[in-house]
Image (cartoon, rainbow, N blue to C red):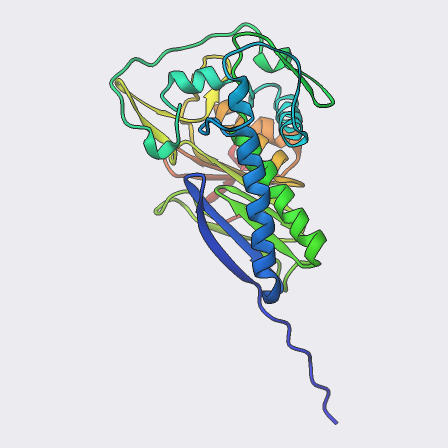
Amino acid sequence: MSRRTAHKPAPVGTDWELWSTTGRLVVTEPDALEAARAIVDEETMAVELASSRFRDDSELAAFRGRAIEAAPISATLAALIRAALMAAELTDGAVDPTLGTAMDAIGYDRDIRLVLDDDGPVRAIASTRPGWRYLHLDGQLLTVPSGLVLDLGATAKAVAADRAAARVASELGVGALVSLGGDVATAGATPDGGWQVTVQDLPGDPSGQISVQGGTAIATSSTQRRSWRRGQAIVHHIIDPVTGTSAPSIWRSATVAGPSCLVANALSTAAIVWGARAPQRLTEHRLPARLVSADGSVIVLGGWPAEEGSTEWEVWR
């Protein structure tokens, strides 16, 4: 008598527009997709209402432009600020959540779809001390001195992906992949062959595909996708906290794999800010990473799989 092997359904997914980018959800059990999408929508909306710079009714908007002294904030906003401070600590301040004023100065003061090329000047805002060091969070009591404007955009999206994937896996008992723009979080069961993730910033850029196990996160930061003209310069949304202006575009994109989207995003964003120092700095963190330079050449390090045309950092340096 032959034994019939149970058929394992293939993962199913859905895509949608979110925050001027693309959201993607994939689950290992087709029957769980609708409920999983509801969880992701709930998590992303909670993060948006807490931290959006572009919504007048967000919790963060209520604090904009004024000093805050031990003000009570929601658990969600507190978690997002705590995550942002962790990212700042991890990157030695290369990722700083107090760059809202600098973002406004380069024209990123509204949804990216509404940012237009502008002939206005590009203003440098030099700072002798990182702004994040002035923030104080005691439980859910927040203190921000006058002159600092919070921008949680980079880390908040990563936290949303982490939280959504974890909730889907925990509450529905399935494997989940949640991608919010360049931030990919996975949790729960791993499909046969692993989660397949294609890493490519823009069409025409070098493309690579990797397979990861559940619980692995991947984040890509780019100088290309959110860029526009200010005066004679092309600027982008990744700010160097030292100058207050867009970091030099030494890398088209930086991708890092890590234990969470928050960690991976912090380091991929920092890699853009670190510029030529990025390979060495990323090596210190011992995580797989992939850098695409301005001329399109690819550098891999930390065990990132080699791909056609790529150069391993140990050889490249």
